[in-house]
Image (tube, rainbow, N blue to C red):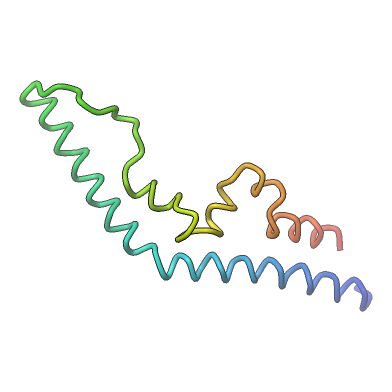
Length: 106
């Protein structure tokens, strides 16, 4: 690989690494809270399903409604980089995706 192409590849890989580092920092800073909330959400759903199955409790909540953990992950203040990845435009035009495409062409 010639020097200019090597420099371009390094630049694209650095952009990808930068994005992953930011995503990792978000994970490190906020994911434990989300993981614990997911356990609470699952326990609530299990309890609710047991009440419905064994006691004929009313279906007072939609089963397919996302829990609080999902809402936490969608908080753009706490998980900005994840939000970019989950966003439809970010999936196509985010910095990581664009840098990856350019790196493949080197």
